Length: 217
Image (cartoon, rainbow, N blue to C red):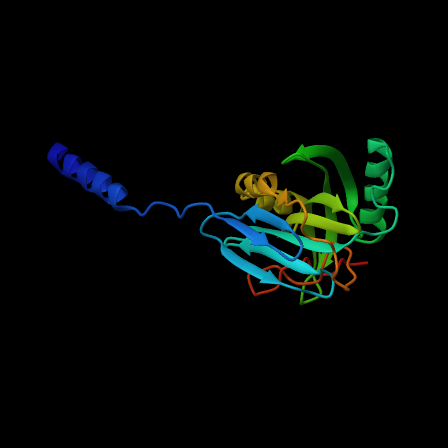
């Protein structure tokens, strides 16, 4: 019996040695709007334009992980003051009024030598069957001129607790991507002509749509 266990242990060790190494992290770049981000290795990368985003660059995995950058026109009165407190209040108002978020939290931070604002909030979202689900959203906003860069991740659940749990399952790897976001100097002059609010209308379920679904009013 002891010998059998020893053989199994050796076989397990050999199998572990044969496991492929994870793919290396690669920085993805959008030259048109002058930004780059290191997306989670091994996740499916996507890039597109939508009615709400001048450019979208992100990645997802089959387990529900999602992180993407949405470039849109900066809304009026969005972090438009010299006061960090006032800017966060403006962001909270925007999230509540436009994105229909609630329990909005906001804080300022510096990422890659750029000032940014992180917003955490909940939304009630109707799925394709009309059932209302909970959505936990994390957005980090960067501003350059009249452009807004929203690095976004979210997760869905039948309850707030389940939405939080689904988000936390991928939060570490998503945070590494958020902290890698970089705005390149001398690029991204915002010549596009689309309108946007940084939040779209796709399902974000791995079916080729990158934006959160419409909030349930």
